[in-house]
Image 1: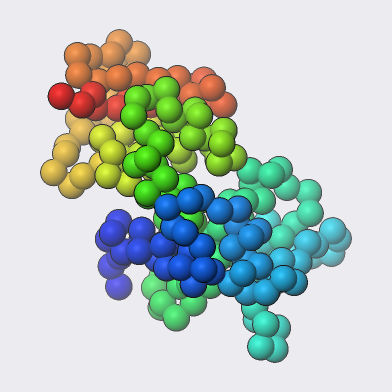
Image 2: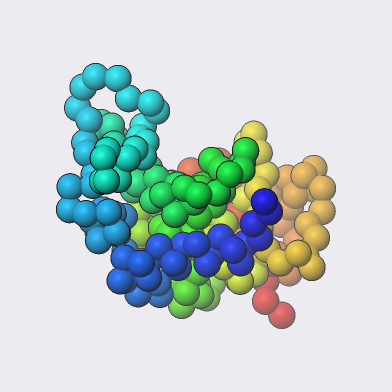
Length: 205
């Protein structure tokens, strides 16, 4: 099964609608989980074994999300969004289910319509990151995924690119050069939460 970005956005918006929430307004994953799965759906695990930072399980007729207690707020929100995405994808049989859930989780945390409303200039990315309690990298990549200009995040170990299929970024080596020296038509932004990372954004013409 192959899911395009439009499908991922649709999954996230469907999660909002099934929870009777407006998909154009970012919602706290705790609230989404309560509305979609019930008030006691989130179980905080303070001791004992736990697979990773959290997981989704069915207990009788109730779906529950088990989350490790000692997580940062940002990490907890990500784990909840990921498990909500797994719940939405529970009938999908695909070896890439974790990656699909990650993609849908990003769209739950940073909804497409909210990005389109909030993003105008590169400096909007740190504000989006702070207001939604997500990393600057996630906020930047969502700009590219949600129909904004093409975006590349150049990190010490990896380079991530997002944008329309019609757009082609140069090689990783060239992108690293752009991150250092810049170029006409490409805006650069250092991420406040990780200054080692540089966001490259194709300037609108």
